[in-house]
Image (cartoon, rainbow, N blue to C red; front, side, top):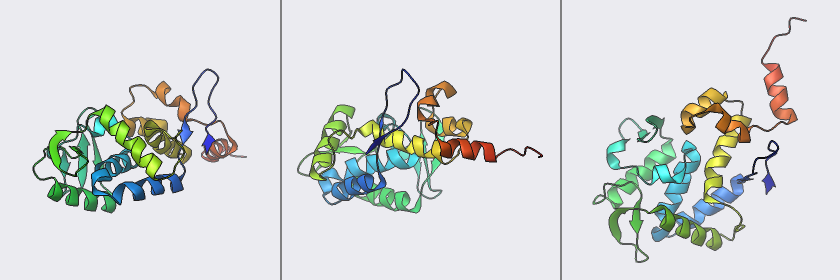
Length: 195
């Protein structure tokens, strides 16, 4: 586990390692009652979205034929990876009575056909985190933060990152910019000095 370097006065966030995400997902997907938690975390990571936005997604926002998912709050339409498309197809079949992609599932695995409340989702997230044997300091919002951090580290322009994440201002993305050698080298390599 490591912390990102941040500018003075900002609070650091924990970056999840790939192995931690995989371990969490493996644990969540191994038990039907935690599957919606796993799918929510995977969507948060793959789409770089906060879980609160994803809990509101309804099947009318998903086009499995086109392979897209729309987040109504931001108006952003995301392409689905083959894995997400497969999981969402199975999800729609298993929860056909629900209009929500991530409905609440009670401990017996029965569909309540209502959206997960953020507080309940966070509580169930912590249960899965413990079952996976992961560091209790890992946070649900850290999944989204990790995805954004990875986009920035990969050199995606902040304007494009902003379009994906739905941030209102580029200044809100500054906490993801690490002033490190990798980022500086990438930025400098993009210009032609002519010398």
